Length: 371
Image (cartoon, rainbow, N blue to C red; front, side, top):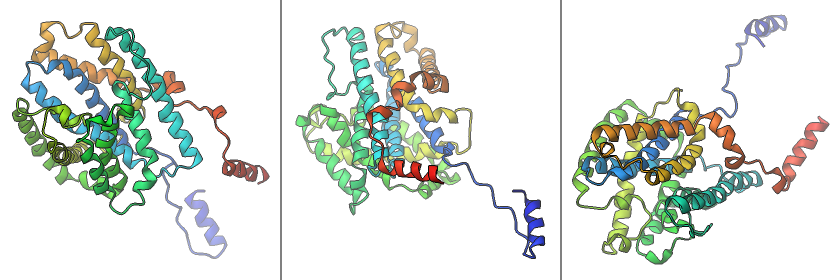
């Protein structure tokens, strides 16, 4: 209804003039800031994987690799936790949990196993749904974390408890590989941190002062990483091994859990400070980051088998820049809407046939028909 119509109606009824109601954003509109953050994070994931074969003989690449690994997956997990706050184990959310995580996990765990039988020359590698291969660990971990969301929302000190769970996990190499339990437990605090965050916290790190402060923090992180490359293992940031497996004294594990959590949290905040809040050309790609995450792994694995890193020039500065750009372009292409349309049947299957209809949904549909 137009403002002029409202004014005429007010005069006709002897009432006071009313202004037109303010326009509201369409329901379900995506937040550009978080889509931008997810896209930039997945680009860093792909770049990090492309740098892996370049680390030998290059201290600079190793330092960059360590810094990126210190925050790119924690950033993804924090954002995943933030968007899991509404998970209440209702039938609809359980269904989306299965179709959006469990089904892709089964499909890509099988696909990666078959693919790496060829690239790793291991034709007898078994398909094991209990032992996540390569990138699929994140799907298994997110499935478990999201199921536990109601617990973290009800306990009094969720983050300290999550840290107390992660710390002793580093003491036990016997946890095993079932569902990559080490990573699930050691990355848990980042998910819980995301659950605790509120919109005002993200507004805080997006202030101009935070963006300025992020510059020396990242510069300092690069200097420290360059110093640390020959002195410590960057595998502490992978959170997939115990202290014993990293050839360190047992007490290092709990201490490094706290140290890496502190470092990673600061770098995540600095990363988010640089993320643009307005819509950009890549904002739409934020909705397809899981596609880019899972699909780029085939190229990352195959590139070594195909000998893409064999030429000597690839390991020089120009080659390293080319590899970086190619990785960024590749994962960008894999996040685009055309790719999502092709793979939606496996990444976001409907599977209505597999679920009983929710009684509340049926009641709402009957009421709508009667109305």
